[in-house]
Amino acid sequence: MLSWIEIDKARLTANINALRALNSPGTALMVVIKANAYGHGLETVAPVVAEHADWFGVNCIDEALALTRLGIQKPIAILGHTPAVGIEQIVQNGYRQALYRLDVAKALSVAGQKHASTAHIHLKIETGTNRQGIALSELQKFAEEIVRLPRLEIEGVYTHFANIEDTLDPSFAQSQFGRFREALATLERAGIRPRLVHASATAGSLLYPEMEFTMVRIGIGTYGIWPSRETQLAARERGRKLSLQPVLEWKTRVVQVKDVKTGDYVGYGLTYRASRPMRVVVLPIGYYDGYDRKLSNSGCALIHGLPASVVGRVAMNMTMFDVTDIGADLDDEVVLIGRQGNGEIRAEELAEKIGTIPYELLARINPLIPRVLR
Image (cartoon, rainbow, N blue to C red):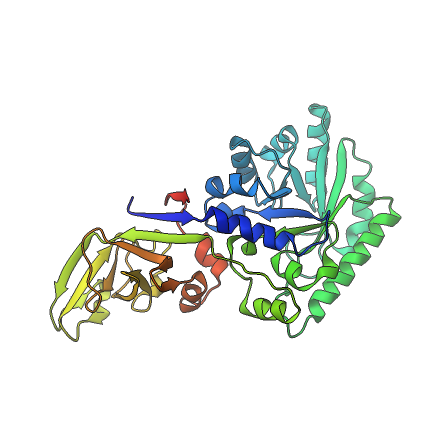
């Protein structure tokens, strides 16, 4: 393997259990494993999650089918859109579909009648994020249309917060919470009382226990990453003391060691010039693998437990690192994310270097890189 991802089963389990413990007994726990389990590897992560979660959350029908092929028996909610070609598979496999379009509702009803089965849906309420969802002004009419459709059951209703991580000014989250409660009242007047009501993802679960309802959806926290530094500090201040441990380590090996003379250039574009005699290693990873090109001349990796800096531009499949003061041999193990000796490189610090968030950094690790459970 040119590079590989190691997934720590014990840490994954501990994170799920710690997040569950924040909620009231009986509150259902949905673990979201969309985007290849946030880059951690759906097929590697899902069997472990299945031992501890009540529900799975995915983005699309393909992810749901992947779980079914793994033999997962837990309920699976598709939180993104499903095109017409996938509607029958939802009904046949008992998946739950996020719903905010009447045409999709009608298609699910038709599929339910065809297969003599019930299509279970979770109504998505628009409360201020302005992504997918049913506007409050349209909800009553929408609900009246839905209840007339045969073989359709409104099992759940939910929303998603836009700015829950702003711990200094929670007013927008509170306004969304108020709109969601208004939506629940509208549905109740129409005789609709879904069994599952959910609003909080990881940050909401950490900061606002009053928004728990009957289910919470945990995503990034599952993998040992805090939604934001502010969320972590605010949770501690509010007595929500828990330890989240990163689950993923990304590793590779040295494929070449070479000497570079003073004045020589390293990499494309002549962006790095040696100011002294150097020893450089070549690693078989690059931006195709998910090691962002913005880490050119700024990233680092761990070799012998010590940080080695990127020199030159990150290429498609190769990156060079300075080991002049460290030393390295062919086939030495290198850590791109994770721990080695006394050193650690966290996803958060790499994300900060490239001007993004850990969610994106992790989700963009090439899915073809092997994921190994340890």
